[in-house]
Amino acid sequence: RRFDHRPKPDPYCQALYPFCPTGSSDGSIPLMKEEDTIEVFRLQAPVWEFKYGDLLGHFKIMHDAVGFRSSLTHRNYTMEWYELFQLGNCTFPHLRPELETPFWCNQGAACFFEDIDDLHWKQNGSMIKVAEITGNVFNKMAKWVKEDNATGIYYETWTVEAAPSPNATVWFESYDCSRFVLRVYQKLAELGAAFNNKLQTNYTRIFLYSGEPTYLGNDTSIFGPRGNKTLASDIKAFYYPFRPHQSLKEFLISLLEIYDEVILKKTFYLYYNFGYWLLPMKSPYIKILYEEIPLPT
Picture 1 (cartoon, rainbow, N blue to C red):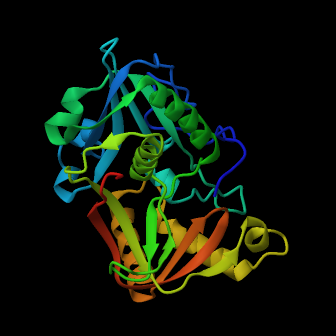
Picture 2 (picture 1 turned 90 degrees about the horizontal axis):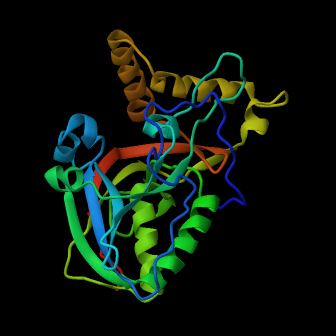
């Protein structure tokens, strides 16, 4: 779903790590000279590589970005799209005792900054040239990125499908760093960029598998004064084991509760486009896949 503007985050939502600390967090990108030739790089590294090194890389849980290098100025730039308040806040809500409704700290945005951290991308990931574009194409892309960033504002972790098969029905699409990179590549192709299609490009996707979802309602219809108190209680109870800042004992108990709800009772409540959906879960329930998605032709 697209929106007409990006709302200001609620002060309650605080990031553990500041969003886009050295760059432009509103999607603004400096213009290049039209006659410039700019190299485009595919950047990929394990999620949280700065903290855990290659740990998540062993499970192919990767973060994606795009790099640019100007032939006129020899300056490098990085562009990526990620969560303002870390992944957990975008995936599960806070259950605040003073509020009737689950409270979401969920926004994702584009970050553009000068420099490419070669060590970060190359040491445990990859930095591969995928195309060359003109400064004119870059400037058109920059205009599109600002518009995309202002209207596509919420992060979505899950891709929900009917089955783990090539032609399965997709109930819900994810909206994350890799989806942004794919949109950028597609836009560059539309603007005339020619990609090196000999390269194999894979992306991390987290899948949930369910039967046909049932729409349950929104915050007002479920949690409001005339809402469904039983359903409201069930949704809050479902999200409670996913709460942050748990002790080890609480975490282990929560894992058992999640297993009981999702695997044994086959229930998952998904919040998508300001509405709650009931997913009737089915085997294999959840998978993390490192899927090949070709570069645009």
